Length: 221
Image 1: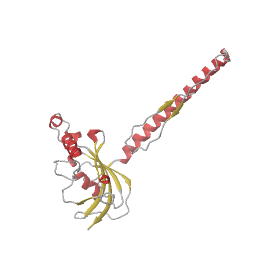
Image 2: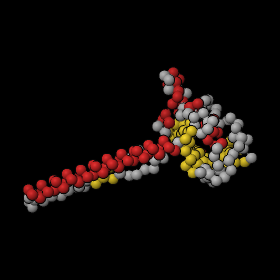
Image 3: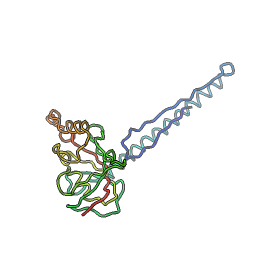
Image 4: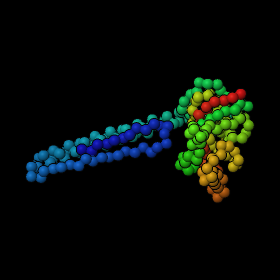
């Protein structure tokens, strides 16, 4: 008998869905086996494989359909954002910032062109007590990439939002914040986004696509 395990993952997680087949070891006593019992075992095995295969096909097709539908329905383009798409992972309950406010955010930054490689995270920036240090900036100052400003501008304090930022709203130069503090991460990020050969080949519309998970921690007027 073949057992099939199909682990269920969240549609929001960036993981590959794997299916493992486990075949238990079978022991048989050849001296006590008869043709009729062997035939019965073969039929039972064929029936079991057929049932498992059919069930597996149903699970895969329904999971793929639900994942695709959820992803398409939940990522919405923010108004007047230049194409930034957002998904609220946790709605906030605090105030909404306005231009001129100092905001504090935590984030995970990933680069789509590198299979979702995480190039920076404020949760890795720790103070002397080991607590993560949030990233501070003045909303509307233009010092950070436009996609982050567009995302934060409509958030409430306490909320967490995933945003997909197109290149036009991402890094336009190497001085825009947030800048990864690690030299090698910073070099890999910018050499990918501003790769002259790939830009000349017409890949500029995809090289700089960013994915940020942003938590609005606090604001100060």
